[in-house]
Amino acid sequence: MAALTFLGIESSCDDSAAAVVRADENGVAEVMASVVEGQTSLHAAFGGVVPEIAARAHAERLDYCVDRALSEAGLSLHNIDGIAVTSGPGLIGGVLSGVMLAKGLAAGAKRPLWGVNHLAGHALTPRLTDGLPFPYLMLLVSGGHCQFLIVEGVDRFRRLGGTIDDAPGEAFDKVAKLLGLAQPGGPVVEREAADGNPARFTFPRPLLDRPGCDLSFSGLKTALLRARDALVAEKCGITVQDRRDICAGFQAAVTDVLAEKTHRALAIYLEQRPLVPALAVAGGVAANKTIRARLETVCGENGVRFVAPPLRLCTDNAAMIAWAGIEQARAGMPSGIDLVARPRWPLDAQAAPMIGSGKKGAKA
Ligand code: KG4
Ligand code: ZN
Image (cartoon, rainbow, N blue to C red; front, top):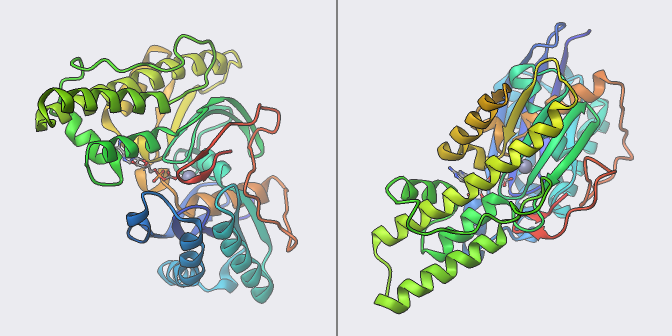
């Protein structure tokens, strides 16, 4: 196969990102540059991502991200074989900012254009980092996503289940808010939990009593709110140790749910008798050491390889979009200049639609 160098552009949520990825004749990939400009401070006062603010910030910053990515890679647009852009799912204003910029660059530099599904970008990342062969099982766990997918091909995904309400990262963020901790909540709650007693508060393990791989996290947050309020009513406030114990109890509940559902998803996946069985994770929540260690144990018990790409490629970035563009180009799935931006775009059109819309926009 021919070597390919792609520019990737990502703007579906609150990260403006551009990257350059090169895949050589043997398919071995190198991330030549990956620029991510977060927007956390712009949305901090609002308790969530404000779509209009996000879209405006993307429109202001994306061209700068592209310039920086190209200059860090030491290339110009004329050295690029193709431009890949997230064309959904996500907050539509942001997706449009990226798609319009990509169309302009493609038309101006006469380069082919590829529309990439953001979730496909996450799902194909283990092939960029570890060269995983199809089929592998993917667990996406972030502030906006939570689903199990069997990745069978560049454009073939089977969704085994996902959250019916909040994503786990969203739950970590809400818990931090309930306890007066900083955002994003995941790392802070993890730090608090490290000094807490996970057995003091027993929070529910939602949906474990039902078959299948769907998950739910919103009830957990309500249970935690009740536990907090009971403490406040009893002694007019909560101590530092109370807070640590609540965080530890919450993290233990999320970990138990993810572990059990992963067992179930692996059982379905292993029915396909994959040659190199593997579970890959992506998303910010995969950074959590307790969750990660437990998933690794579950994989060990099932004789399955555990793959966790480096965090900067697990969270939202444009290298995964450039790579997915290369994979699509190699599979002969061209897009064109009439590419449309899609707010919703499920990877598995056969699976039942997912319910709800998270803090970070529509789930798909
Ligand atoms: O993948 P990501 O950077 O962005 C998207 O959601 O698309 O994930 C961010 C989410 C946030 O909700 C954050 O609280 C959570 O991942 N997170 C964590 C940890 N680090 C980040 N959750 C649990 N433990 C962590 N260490
Ligand atoms: Zn994402």
